[in-house]
Structure formats: structure tokens, C-alpha cells
Length: 156
Ligand code: THU
Image 1 (cartoon, rainbow, N blue to C red):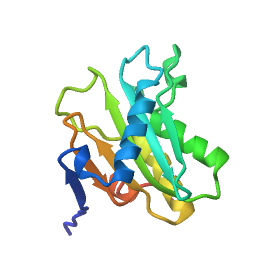
Image 2 (image 1 turned 45 degrees about the vertical axis):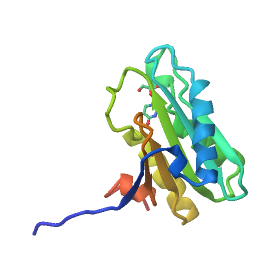
Image 3 (image 1 turned 60 degrees about the vertical axis):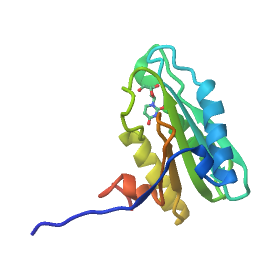
Image 4 (image 1 turned 180 degrees about the vertical axis):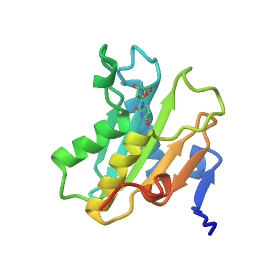
């Protein structure tokens, strides 16, 4: 029998439409994006992770001449959080990217491997992580949970 999967997300027209706290999170992700090491793809990605204490952890993509050895921005940030703040709940992750790899107007959204890692960050803390996706148009898509990005995800 036919089944459907739905999820809701919020769309904000610009940064100014976000709360001050979210604007700061986006600004931090942009700061991280600007420091990305992406000499091969020239596609810069920044991720900012808001912890329950208010601490913001930053990550950006770190490429390598042996291409598969590099790592995406989201996982750099989340693995840092796991390594250094394992007992603290992650509230939000914000992702921003820029580069010619994606045509203007393309949806900027995390890769499958990052979704899998984001899903485990969420399930291990038993608390939803809000996801903010900053589009090249400056619109921001906000999802309440990583689960929405990975339906039928592999998890416990
Ligand atoms: N990248 C990320 O940092 N996050 C994603 O979710 C997708 C892709 C990086 C990996 C690589 O350095 C560059 O973007 C091009 O794929």
C-alpha cells in the first residue's frame, strides 16, 4: 500500500528575519566558511554548532590532495563537539557554502555521509538538533530535526 513521508520546514527570506541568536550562528558559519581549506573543489563550506551552554563550535571543509582523505565541514564540527564536549547537548547546526560547484539557485543541503553523522549526534543525545541551511539566495531553511533530512536512516 502507498505510504507517504512528510516533513515541515520553515523558510526565512533573509538573515534579518532570524532571531539575533540565529543571526550570530549564521555569521559564525560564514566566518568558518571563509577559513575553509578547499583548494581542489574551491567549494567552501562552513558549519557552526550551537551547544546548550551557548558555546559555538565551528568547522569547515578540509580537503586533501588524496581526495577521499578530506572531510566535510559538518563532520569536522560535529566530531570536534563529540571529542571535546561529549556530555553537552547540541541544539543547532547551521551550514553555509559558496563556490561554482553549485549553480546559483541549487539547494544547499548536507551530503549523505554528513546526514548520517548528524543523525547519530541527534540520536545519542536523545534531543532534536535544529538544522539551518543558508541558501545562496540568503533564504534560510530551518528544519526541526536531522531525522527530516534522513528518512529511513540507519540508526539504533
Ligand atoms: N562538502 C562539505 O563540506 N559538506 C557537505 O555536506 C558536502 C560537501 C565539501 C566536501 C568538499 O571539500 C567540497 O565540499 C566539495 O564536495
